[in-house]
Length: 128
Image (cartoon, rainbow, N blue to C red; front, side):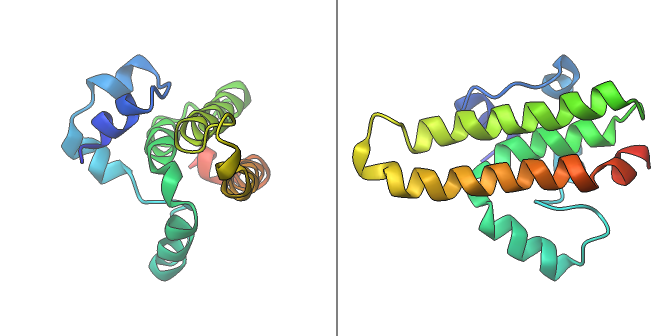
């Protein structure tokens, strides 16, 4: 599936430039979950562990690719990622579906952990 279509289907938020970028360029930018310095095998494991959040990570990678090296935009990129992960979670595991609560809780913890990791360790990548 096209990355932009995936993001649109979930109603994810992105800067306007994201929607103007070609699919080919987005595929070049997107590296899965995790920083560039993570070995491929590590990124594959992490991407699999966080697989439902792919659309959020595509947008997040795009934000990092276009970094202006400012703290406010670093925080905005990470906050947008968390917000987009919550949109995906709400669509795939709605709170109204009580039978999905256990899975929702597991994915919620993973989303929060991914956000905290970017918040705590993402600054050096943002600056590069």
